[in-house]
Amino acid sequence: MKKVVTIGVLILIAVSFVGALYYLYQKNQEDPTVYETQQASVHTIVKKTVATGNIVPKEEVLIKPNISGIIDEIYIEAGDRIKAGDLIAKIRVIPNVSSLQSAKDAVVTAKINLDNEQKLYERQKSLFEKGVISANDFDNVEVAYKRAQQNHRSAQQNFEIVQTGTTSGIGSAANTLIRSTVEGMVLDVPVKAGNQVIESNNFNDGTTIATLADVNEMIFEGKVDESEVGKIKEDLPLEVTVGAIENKTFNAVLDYIAPKGVDENGAIQFEIKGTLDKADTTFIRAGLSANASIILARADEVMAISEALVQFDPKTEQPYVEVETGDQDFVRKDLELGISDGIYVEVKNGITKEDKIKVWNQIKPAMGMTAN
Image 1 (tube, rainbow, N blue to C red):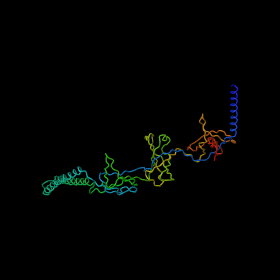
Image 2 (image 1 turned 90 degrees about the vertical axis):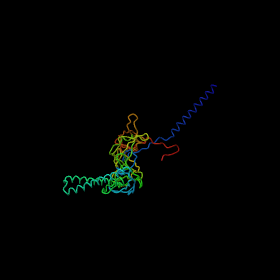
Image 3 (image 1 turned 60 degrees about the vertical axis):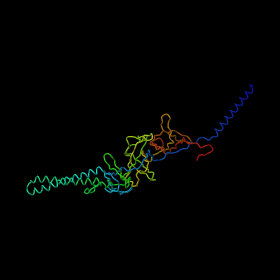
């Protein structure tokens, strides 16, 4: 029995020895790792963050009526360019029954007073001509008569305004004719002929008849995440791209960052605004979606290397690369880095453009395949 065990142990040892020799032989047959190298090059590096939003007019003017009624006619449509004072719409007044009756009663009352003052005036005039009353007494009667005439005219005009929205004698002040208050393009006409509109007053914003804006003054209006808002500041340059306008970038300047964020789907968003360069005459329709690249930092024509080449000391976190000094011999060189765009990083000091840098994290080709 002991002899069988001994023979088994010897066989196991022999198999292990042969396996070890075979493993070492295979390792010796493998090609040694050959590291490729890269050299620094000149790049323009732009560090930026992106905000999404829309292109909107800098200022929009809402045209609202100062009298309630029904739209009788509309003289404009979206896309028209109009000037201040141009006619926009005409309103037909639907009078309030109570106000109409009160105005009518006021006319009747004023007429009664006028008739009475007229009789007194004619009687006193006859007496004055005969020398019975003094000029002073006659003047008082004449003033009262003229005041009654004026009150009657005012009551009649008020009745006409309540009934029709306008009256003779007020000219361009007729509030049934809605006119533009500014020059610009008509962006929207949300009402149609026959729609009822409500006047703008202290208790009601009123019905918007038209929206106007100067399309030559457009801004980018978007939002950035709270993780990015600390990196930006006013007056930073923007590069705006509009989805509907291909191969075109618009320059802008960041001129507003909201002091308070808004919770949107669990993320805090801050509103930003940037004024587009007026020198660009490209027509941009209001409301188009756009992306704005906020330029945080920029370095033009600087020496840079791929970020993939940079290693970091595990203790000091000092960035460094390995530079070739001979055939597959490398030496460490510490770096002073500048800005990065996530692909290339600026190298301020540590290497030259002639140095060959080790590509340390290259991917080995799969078994049976060769590298291109």
